[in-house]
Length: 248
Image 1 (spheres, rainbow, N blue to C red):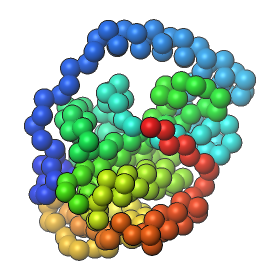
Image 2: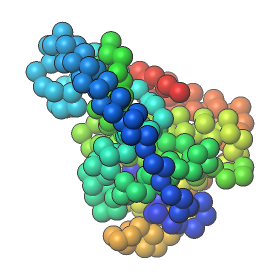
Image 3: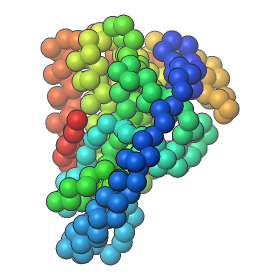
């Protein structure tokens, strides 16, 4: 997967103060969760599931059958769960919850998505299991992938690709003409995906990832504001398994 350090060269998170949650909203949401979890439990019984939501994400379950992949904007109530997943997704260079807060505080300069594994027919999609997430930074006419992460047990099913495609389409709508990223030099699967999405190597950064000291390839897709690039994204998407729903 792809990861930018907290303060790399170029576009970087600012030191903005995280937004204080609306605690009345927190209480209201907690009450909603009690009701919605009961709906999820009933739906799992209808589907004959023997394990709780978010468990048993093994190879025997298909994204295209009783469960859907849903992409929604990352919200403040997702941060705690995402931060808990970080050591599993990025064992050597995990981000903290505070860094995710700082990123979300950037407003329109950032676009973060959360990938959810949702039981079909359940309205409370944001209570489904988080299986991936990704973030994009925008600056002038350029964009930069800040992070793309997918939990190990569902890798290889197109979750990362769908997150990337959604972010790249957002970058195009925002007027970006190019998009860059860094990826570990030993992450061959991620590099292959980025190549399919039109990214090419433009350099190497030694010791880029800290504290692990890992090296990174710098990759860039350019131009992304053309009809041809839009067609490329459509082509890659058509080849992916399952189905996805992108919600505002």
